[in-house]
Length: 475
Ligand SMILES: Cc1cc2nc3c(=O)[nH]c(=O)nc-3n(C[C@H](O)[C@H](O)[C@H](O)COP(=O)(O)OP(=O)(O)OC[C@H]3O[C@@H](n4cnc5c(N)ncnc54)[C@H](O)[C@@H]3O)c2cc1C
Image: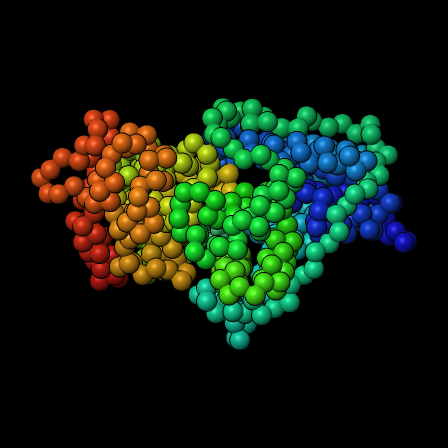
């Protein structure tokens, strides 16, 4: 096959894999030689949107990528600093004729892309961005009036009806003749000046991600419709960190789930596969919202709720973060997050609603803490989840739908197994005490170490309804 370029740079970002990687595959087809590079961000210390667990997981993914690239005959170059400056330097060092990359769905990444394209034009180097992180991007799924969707269900119907891009072969052979190029060492969390997270993290990298996908396809996704709301155990696929880092391609995951659906006669398995695919559509729904309405990072999506007088009680916020609210299901979720960098979706909703509806603390503070803590921390889905929980988002749960943490426990953790797993003080507490608020006047003390509920849910529910109604009336 004839090659259009002698040398192309592939700029790795959130696509840390060799299999079914759109830009990398295109670069390997178009160029005699591909120079793979990852530019490590240069911030140090505390970061409002990132924390040690995700950086540790990222570092593990990069370490694995570096080895996979070496096995394919290439060499991953690490640079540290601003992406545009470092890529420009690499162009000069290598004489590459083009830079290929997969596009980022968030506004920060897009800004860098725009700057890089401008720089490329000035240098006479081609800069090509590819769709890879999503099955359908920004303007592919629009209403009949060519407007972005604000509500999920019609978006999903349209999204599902569109043909999906096929899976691409893995890049197994890379040529490298620029072995002299300087490279930083593969980063660790210390590179960003972060302490060790202390979290028990899943194995990082493409091979581990593919194993998780296979496990999910055989053991989880066939039963997903029944199990997905149960917070303990292998009830969901746990693939979000892999989708976040791009150690797994969403195309391949989608096509494998659709194939599983096609090859079964079991209605329950088909339903589970359909439910799973619709979760992948949620991910893209939130990404298209952020594409079209980047202001959601600042404001409530639903304009009527902008300016709500949220609470900024530091002590209450800290009790929520520490898992010491006295609401066992909330505390279990917050401790799972702190110990693993992960949290089940049902419990994310419960903990987020507790912060915004029981404590009326500004959802942006919870959004930030989740971004700092989650290894799958993803700006669009996180913002969407928080705005949904606060009742301020697109397709929002109306403000008056306020989940009761006790009833949620009865529905989704009726035996208290999840709570006991993450809150050791409650290990021997009778189940009934985990499912009901303490009777008026009595003390809720399964043992002395565990606090009483910090608020009365029923009372806070009424105050929250008033809070929203008053704001609306004053407009
Ligand atoms: C307050 C809040 C914050 C959230 N923050 C994030 C975040 O930072 N990053 C993130 O990836 N997800 C986030 N979610 C969505 C969801 O909780 C996670 O995607 C899910 O828990 C990941 O676990 P899983 O891979 O086992 O999911 P599964 O149930 O197996 O679902 C498969 C995939 O579908 C996607 N998905 C599932 N549910 C959702 C959803 N509600 N919204 C968007 N995509 C979804 C994910 O990519 C997920 O990996 C958030 C939800 C809430 C309520």
